[in-house]
Image (tube, rainbow, N blue to C red):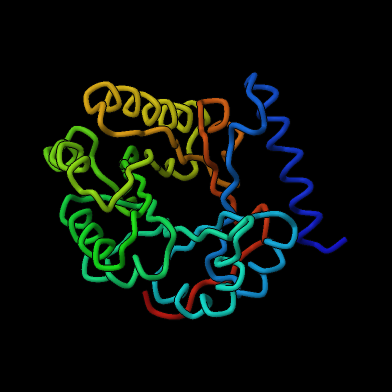
Length: 243
């Protein structure tokens, strides 16, 4: 068994255990393999082990891999899907829509409009998640949930016919106590419930939260998608290219 296969087996056991502890079924939680900084060959190896949903941080980095994994994305059964989970500048919207099967880091109305225009030109309906900033850290991206920008985006999204708003995403603060992490995840679930009631034309079923170090807490707090990189692929090398 390869190192990746062993890591996946351990990870699946941990996810199943977290689901049991939370009184949930394993089928309620999607595993996104965060493949940023790893080559296309590693993605192909992970796909051969049964993984089909991958997360990437940078447009240009993924562009260098896409030709090698396109055969896996274009097949009829169990196509590989790649989503952008890193911050996206609006001037890169067109290229992102060309490359990715979903954008999980929507954080402004302007970006939504750019993505909608780009998807329209390509004849696509693009799945998106709204990234919500629930951490005080300056480095964290996302919409402030009580901001006018968030309200404007939520009001306008149903009219952007080439976008398919599916839910919310957040990143918990680093190096904090468990109650603080839980509070972050619980807050995202609360905003999802509040916004789903206030904007019934939006389907906000996905809660993408939890990574290698805190996915068990996220599952306990209602995550429907967890994003795991290090626990699956091992310690990554820093990206040396440009975004």
